[in-house]
Length: 243
Length: 225
Image 1 (cartoon, rainbow over the protein chains, first blue to last red):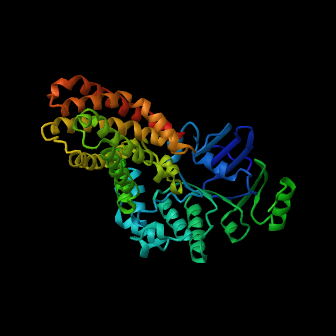
Image 2: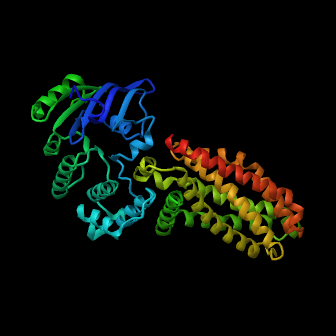
Image 3: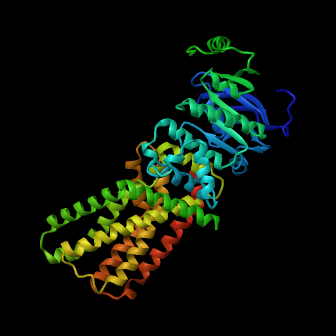
């Protein structure tokens, strides 16, 4: 993606380093993702995928280098960035003792909005949870929680999606829905960075694959140029515990 | 208006979750009743001894119950990493502090109502004449305890030894409040008019203002961690 200027890119990462104590997790990462593009972020455990997503989402701060969303610096303009990104991470960001509808209501109210009942029901219907609107989240399966978490994020209308294993725990129907949603999201001009371990159909969403190992990008290539075997070989080259 | 809506959302969510789970309310109320039983058995029927230690016991009951409740203020946010989502939602984060503080005030008010009622019954104390003044002291003291407790509850939420660290941090900071509320309560229960304890009340008001302002100003930084 060389040649992308800052104004073209919705996500721009330059010379990003992140260390926890003496452990270097990200070591000079450069990455650009333009509007309308979905990028799959692959890498073995401990490669730094989640850390990269957390820096872009403003949860973590870089040790050195810069990360920008739509031109806004993730460290210095965190509040501006937060209005632009949607993060789906390992935590579902849901309260177990509230119902599905109450969870969505709370997060819209906390965003300073008056929740529109139709929009809330619509978001639940989109993730096929409209029948469970008044059921406590504590009783949901992991897949249902993941879908509700996605519905929560949809209501925030982000321009950039940062997804950490978004397809995990989803059944076939929900996977299909999510694929369609992500395609529609990029068609609408949004950008997606999706971290995953899987080499399967999930990657169909991505137009480009970036492989991270030992905190460095070891491959940045259009999807289709690398097969699962080649990805495994790259993992093995750069890590001892290739999966 | 957005700030109020955000703070209200936090109160609404916490009250709703607590009403369903009843985890904190049940534990705190049960603990308060147990504590009163222990006090009753320890002190027996010696009225003179009782009169001299009553203000301390009343507030000890409230404080110990509050330690249990306040320390759990942010446990809910740790589940499913909701803390992260609170941080990532754009807007003034001190609304979370105000919402949590309001929720803690409600919890403490409930505990105090139970503790005070049981005290009057168990210890056979007549608080009738002192009640208006006592309620004022309770309100000011509760605000001070809850303001610091909410802040330190957030501060220790992600610490491994939080149950240990929370009271160790909280109690020294609360010394001025504890001193003022115990001394005021002692005077009021002895039949003194409210004017006699006005200097303690001023100290309570000043402490409350300082604690709440510090909480509001530092919560953003604390949440960003």
